[in-house]
Image (cartoon, rainbow, N blue to C red):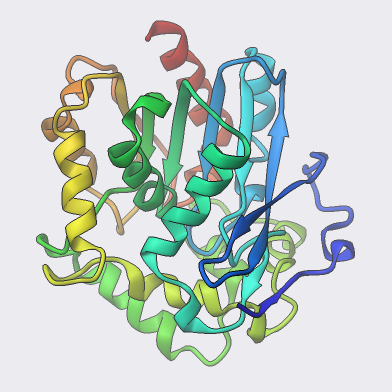
Length: 302
């Protein structure tokens, strides 16, 4: 598998991001390997908060939350999905499949890092991958915090807002990563922060993963990932470990999905589900410290 690797100097001096990079090699699925980046802050023997980002962001999205989590005694692990951030970026759209994204993260988190007792914090595609991993490896996880995410099977209408986004992602001539993140926030991001979201992508050839992600969301019952997600849901419908939703109040893409998670997952019963006021789709940007505080409180109480 051919892949591009963003030069390190592209990440020099990013605002609010003092975290040392860590890397591991995972099988690419074609006999080679890919280098995957992750942030790893806090004591190595502390309880793990696994922070999974989505489209088209990277672990930089969690920079406001990591100090709050580590300050509360947690270990914060924030990978960059393959195709994003400092991780390698396969050059062909066909290299990216839902199944491969799940396997790349499984290989990193379990084979390489051997994480256990995990508190999953997931947003956007972080949930599509993370909740699959919970469904397939429930013993690795202690609890879940779902924020603006879901695990679709193609059996529900994803809504016009999603399909408008999907069309835009395929039709736009140049995929404007930084402005996309800015547009998904309720706050206007400073130019240097917008530039930080553009940093992993020197040109369009680095964006094949970001372009492909919207097409990989199961939107029909016969989607290639639909059956595996249904199997994951079979586990989630029996999941009685603590499950918290912390959705924002201003995300048109995932609005209402929290109600299904709350009603269908036994571990969500009786939890202090919260709505993050003033947060957009990327609530980690708009209200990162507030979301982190909710995670810390949830860990303490459960």
